[in-house]
Length: 233
Image (tube, one colour):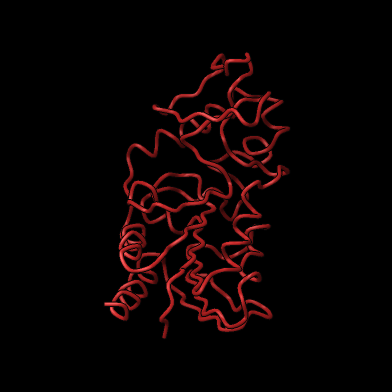
């Protein structure tokens, strides 16, 4: 099935859901009973930074009570035999905690903050709290290091390059509804084997060599990883 070495994996909210992290956007269009516009947009930040900080503090606190699941750990095992690059839409750190070493966060990282007056000033957080009055050295308020709706996705160009160079592409835990990440599938070479793993997965238009696995991250990805490792044993 596969005898090359560079595997690129695109992960979405379904990957973290099986660790107990609620998927932000549900059928009612709310994030934990908050409107997206209120907690994940520049306008929401300007209206009420206190509410935005509280929202992400709760999400951050949640991280201390969850662990990587078998799908996260499977990707770490995959690194033992292949070069693996993970592109994730998730803002949690579960891939890193599972031991994956090449992780590109498209939408930012929950355990980081950045300055509101200097985008290049980014710091790691050592607790779940980020509050009003937490400032960068230049005096700017720190905000969550998250790509909000309406903001550019700085890592997108790197993600496109990774997908274009992939020998095998695995998309897991996302129904590919959120752009620009949803368009990444189309940058893979026509000859590249592709897997789309999600309970709601549907065939993608004009994408060749695509296999659909309608299952959750754990039950869809772990058997695939085991198969790939067995082939390269």
